[in-house]
Image (cartoon, rainbow, N blue to C red; front, side, top):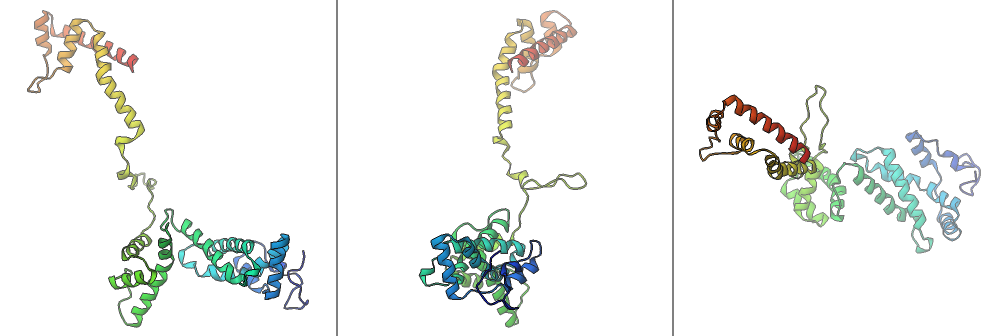
Length: 313
């Protein structure tokens, strides 16, 4: 593998700086190696940047990236408070560094370290916003600004309170602090309060798994579900409506007059006093048969109606 920099072969400058980068898996060794990689002078940086820009020299681009790995490590360390792995933050920062090298113009009179800083932070910011919570807490530019400043500003206010011998156990913002943040960040106080609420809340499963003892856990899905517009429920309700109207009418039409009247009197007729239709004995007296015979006719008619309804459905 070629030499990273044209420099004297001394104990402080290894012949092959690429060999300083350890195998993956040991973060401490990686950080140590990144901090030992030699920095580029302005002339070397300009030379490698022009080689990459004009000749697409990937080896030159690699030298630019390697010499700035320590910058990524330093920037990533500033975002450890968000609970994400340091290695992942460094990895995303390295992606931003490579994007910066790809777009860097050596003729603009700016050092790569200054230009790359923006790209490194932007990539880390994007990673944090996507992975800090399952649900995004910041989407607009103002919300992103609040997200990455609110935590540090709260710590600053707590430090000021501690210096003034005030109560530092409260983690909520008072109105004066909210207004101060809003002025400093050029946003509305309501936006500060909204972001504070988002940051203080946690992720909640919509449909939590059952507990170990077999009991179903209660989650937001229980009160967010609109059963009235659930597709299966709507289809079932439509089928019930059809069976209750056209289906019943078709089933009744398949009966003889006596059987139909018995079913209507026993099951479908409602008087003004909600007492229902005629009893078995009333119908038996009308047709001159026993109440048991009326019951048998009713059973046979209902069985025939069920067969008709099944075919209709």
